[in-house]
Amino acid sequence: MYHLNHKVRYSEISADGYVDIAQVVNYLQDCSTFESFSVGDTIEHQKESRYAWMLAAWQLEVERFPKMYEDIVISSWHYGHKGILANRNFDICDSEGQRIVSANSIWFYFDLDKMIPVRIQDEFVSMYGHHEKLEMDYKPRKVMSPKEKGREEEPFKIRKSDLDTNGHVNNAKYIAMALEYIEEPQKITSMRVDYRKAAFYGDCIVPFVYEENNKTIVELKNPEDEIFVVVEFEKKEK
Image (cartoon, rainbow, N blue to C red; front, top):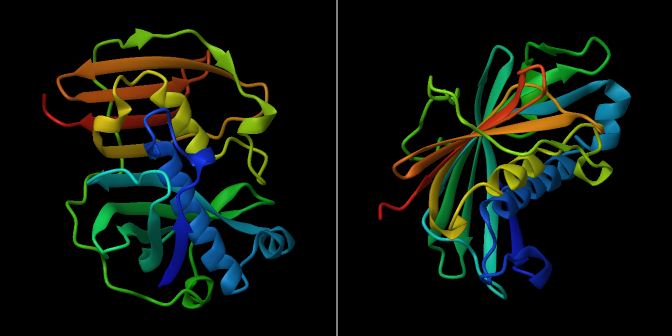
């Protein structure tokens, strides 16, 4: 288990003085990246070995969002793997030790030369250890969109600033894109993200938005109707 102590900075908050759920995912990604660095599984090592961890799905449950100046502790731990998939929990606790965010993530191990997922060998995860699964209401990995056609929004293109070290869109950037279609994002209490296809610089994104009661689903597609990612947000009941 890896712990990252952090003070919320002005550059990380939204207009309301709190971080949004995309920034929360940035915290979680940073924590897992620092853990990988601590055990020698660095980005440089992955490029040399030609294998890398790729994210398949997120589930976040939010009690409240961290606010500016607040001291928080972000934690990350591996709790199991099978076949091509590995499972990792996260949480964020406040200075009193109260958990304010709980998260589950699903990853696959990827052959960078063959561009395919590969079966995870024990030695790939042994460096991270094995820890207890977090108690939370686990939801399905796949996010299914409603059958009726969603509301189409204005298309846009991927910028260079959206990319990560793998050359495709950073996982948290998709969430920031989807948040553009959410009113009162500070009321979000739950989010699921289903990554389907990597987007690259210059790709065109066509957003489709589905709204029903306290739930909003945002699909980010290409013009050929192929889905890059599906993001499901749930908010507090009105």
